[in-house]
Image (cartoon, rainbow, N blue to C red):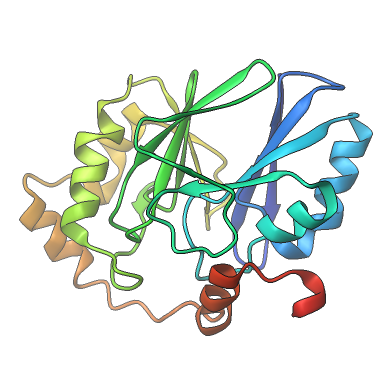
Length: 230
């Protein structure tokens, strides 16, 4: 299997390029528009055909490469059915599967960070977007976020996955590349709570400033802007 984890230092975003092997179909999760040329070069070097691209949610800290990749490769643009994006080709329902050549992912609806957040399970790993981070969780104070919904998504969906499941988030700010469900359950400081009310108390008192790109990124991602429109 081909599994490339790429990093955007400006927004601390992880992008994933996945394929079952050279010369086969590929998909990309959470692309950043400024790195489109890099993604295309990786695809070309491995003779991969990009057929699907996924955003885990509407991002507020960077402009997605979803539509730019579609423009260049004619790949299908995928998000969960709750997404308000105007350029999505396929909207996945909770527990619905998505396939490329010899690869299958299952969508899990995990609202909380936003109301359109989805995670994607693939064999021994889960792509958690901003819902579950390494030693952290996604903020819940904008984009129709809800700390109570986030608690339900994390504790009753993600933490019910097998404990050895690898966690691959959309962001990390401390150089960590992955974790496991077991590690997050036992060591993530935000998850050492006894109730959703206790979790909400933590999340509602973070007092975080808005992402610097938020006023630009959110409308751009809803409209699906490409490089020539920026």
